[in-house]
Image 1 (cartoon, rainbow, N blue to C red):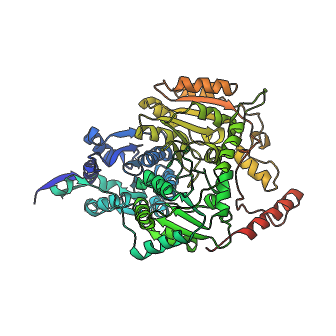
Image 2 (cartoon, rainbow, N blue to C red):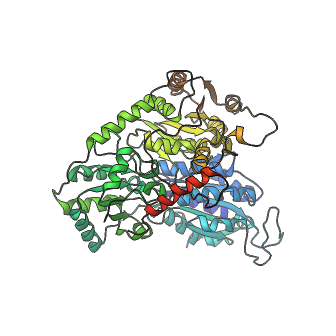
Length: 608
């Protein structure tokens, strides 16, 4: 047997560099790295040695460089991914939030944090977390509940099984998610005689499982028996590459559809059968269909509470739930009738069985009325008042093209964009599974790396920008251009509205309602310029539109700051959301809100 003698770190990066997609590209496109004593001597040396065969990029924060990797994988529809490495201790635990984000969103990323010494000679090593009752525990055990596969590499030969298992998870459409290979720092530097065939290039195919014959027949029967079906398209449509299949299915059988946050952009907004979004951030016309549907056909969705209005929006008496999903866990939620299959394959098989079966037209006028309503919301303010978020979205929408990708993650904008944004196919990127503040800047960079020919527009509020903005400097350094529209409502405006809607007093959300000694006036333009980006503050909607046109030609990120009114919501659409209101309070507003909450709870449908 021919062997190659390498350190474990050298073997890891060599193996990763030859894992291929069916198109011949690297599956792991590169490695984000912040080095410390737990990975610089082992993985650092190995990554330097492998060079451009597996590129290394330097981030500013372990969490946000992981966000960039996750956004890249999402933009690539899980067909490619990135790895992220840190030292032990705070570098590793900084990445736990990102791992949870990837887990919730079913997105592949490889975490390789440094770990304690396998030989325990310097025990406890710098930054080591000691468990007084379990000597096998390290800080990296924090990853266990938030990754799909965890392994600790404490011997060089562990890589022979751990690495293929890691890629199996990352390329499995049902189990897809983050992987953590905690890499003991002394093991990284140990040499081993690896079989040469271990480093032969390998192609990883994404399987497309066929549906079970019985489940398929039952699904077809359920659809035939329906009178008013509605399709709820989730992220699984996009990860299956089934966008056109979904559209063909809807058109063939005349079934209207709505899209979740993860599924938005699967179908162009101009399609007549596209009625927007469902649930808490639902369009008026979409939620009307949801309330009337006697069969809800979920395609690649996990039916998160925003999608379902905390299980109140699908309210027709006797309605049934058919869930087409790649994973049985999701397909069986809420007693749904499951069809476990690849989304595209399932739709093709169902359509063939249905033949020419078609349903009556939905209310197209309701759809037209909705867009007239949003046109009015998009219009620029006539006076000198601060613009609303809807008016900012309108301005961005008017200056975006079919090649634009709008992205966001937390605060006001995700809900406003879901209900209002008119997305072209592939033009929407929202991290709303974990709704992680601070994803936006790093995520925009990751999207642009994945889709260099697309115009990436990052919508971010001042609160989320303050959470994590340091990868703006990385994007400048690497020459990765995108446009940031920073809406400054001087605090956490979204939660301030929710606080008041549940009867609470404005408190600790807007800067003016927070405890402070000195008045806080944040200069976001100077901050962004200090990191090397183009930055400008505009006084209104006209200025925003002008600067957006200029930003398209920039070679580095452009930050456009605009003050907005923190008070108004979207102004249209929406639905009840289960946010528990206190049963007892001295505030009359809370007691009144509790009555509305109890009414909402009474409408919840806990079983199918």
